[in-house]
Image 1: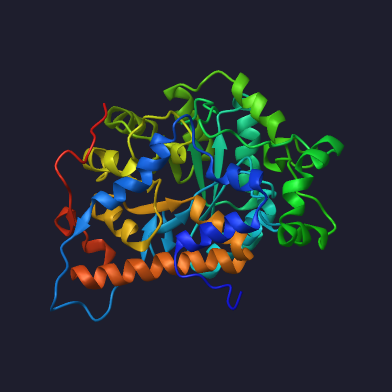
Image 2: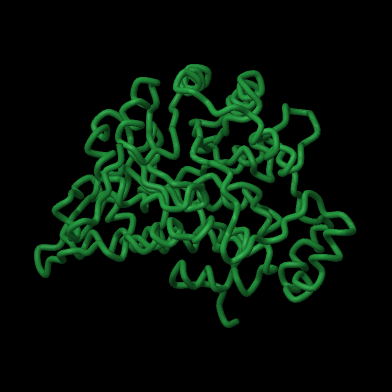
Length: 389
């Protein structure tokens, strides 16, 4: 390959597919049941259009914004995603890339790297928690994130444990033991570049989740922590308010698609709401988040920061989301494809693609700042939006 630079997120995805063992790549794609929501997250953006201007375009564009009190060089946040074993440096490489491009990184409770290492790589880290194990366990995780220096908290509540996929689910072992090695050997050996990246570190992919343990305690396996999560009764709105108070700082509730949920979230004191359907990995049949965004933003966008999560693949998607009411967007799969394709540099490449796309789209539609964007800048077909609740 003459160059490892890529010009589009789609190219990063193709390179990730070529580089990663089949099961690892399939775990990144994820989705549930028919994959209808996962596909609609991306397809819905293509239904939206622009009305470009031919003259009086701004010579300079301002892309910077703020979210939950943090400065962003452009309106993108890296969404928390778990167990980033596509590269030995995992979440630390993603955090460094985000820091180099002036954006916030979200860190999953199910990440493969400790929160302390990630914050050291990027002080602008939002720590994400799930409602798992009850208040004592969650309070300990929040305290650890606070001690590490995280500047924001994200609570993800939108998962119903839907795992069936019409195209089949990948084999993901609980640990790398002899059985796992024998089963995965053919597909791993067919991807020598990925295998070598681990062999030269003298380590195999770590499938434990250190941030689900108290500092200094052994990290549980992903499936051990997943089992705890499944057995924990679902949270109430009182529990959400308790998390907000316990953290005592900027707090995002992730997974909101209904207007009534968004309004209810205001009463808990959240700082931000992420309109998200877990990347289509949750309840299949949920509308694309960009379809649900306008109603949620209209209802609560003047009182909290509204973020769009799901389906963003290019800078023009970012602009569409902002025009329909989002303050910023979150990206999950795209940085992981960049990470798989070229490590930290690949994540930076993805962020540069998104930033360049935002800038060129602003110029074309005649806006000098992301703050100027409104519904007048996009062409929304009849019947596009969905108001839920």
